[in-house]
Image 1 (cartoon, helix red, strand yellow):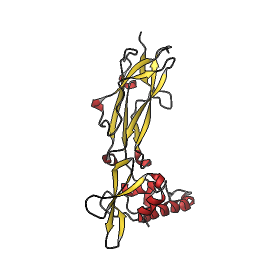
Image 2: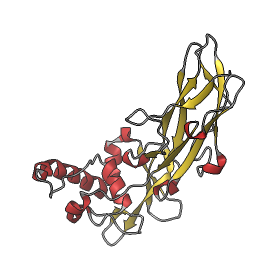
Image 3: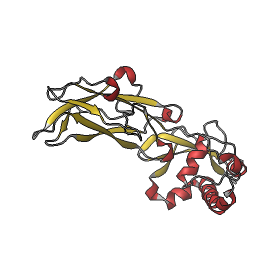
Image 4: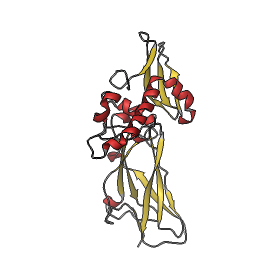
Length: 256
């Protein structure tokens, strides 16, 4: 019989894992794309020659848009001679500003080819990948809201860009031990949001830039050069002769 082919996803008990793979760009601000390795395995014998297999997008189970959210797949892929497994790259992209508000899904399926049957159950030949750029309020935010202000995804994103990590949860038994580290991260974020121009000048390796808006205002857009469509508004306030980041609700971002 012709050999079959399937997606080699297993849970911690070694059983077939048919759950959706989830990914968020939110934890890595500025990352324009990431490669997900899709593990493909044969059900049959290894042969001393290259063999072709087909991995394609299931349109009816996909909400992502090719080129905007992911790179197009190849017409076919090659299982190398004497091999039984290979990783196929699925490149997903962080170019759509709407990923900050909602997730998209791309579903892949292995089909029949001249070298492999597509006769195994759909559950092990099909996999969905859901991704977004959405941040959610962490448990520690409430303890430091006096410094960070009311939660907004934009403030959270700027905090991460400044190098911030999880802060101390003061209700935890040893929460007080994380206070020095917490204050360090908050201070870095405060310096950043108070003068983003100086921060960009000091951190050219970060890839972030500030460009003047084209609407005739004195305002700027802050974004990563690899993801120019995902911008944060930096607004000038003549009353104080200063610039402030604006969050998704149109409010000033102030960190104390």
